[in-house]
Length: 104
Image (cartoon, rainbow, N blue to C red; front, side, top):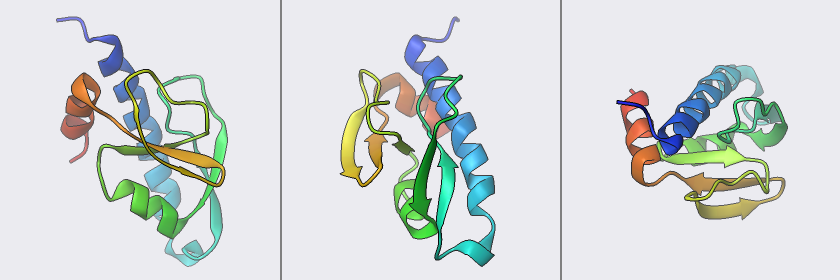
């Protein structure tokens, strides 16, 4: 079965999330603002967003939530919050199923 557009985009987002989790893994910088990769579905997007470790952990506390640059939301993304310099979206539908399956 050919993956839907939403499934392909959600896979891209999961790849960016994995990279961001590696960035967040350095406990020595937990109180500082850090540079993360926009977690939008555009495989070519390498835009930086800036969050503290705590802000990233709050986004990440729900596996369906992603942090991305304002304006990088996709059709079907549900905007959960707009913060200073980034937006939190929730994946729904096919995208949510892909995220759930990829987040062990």
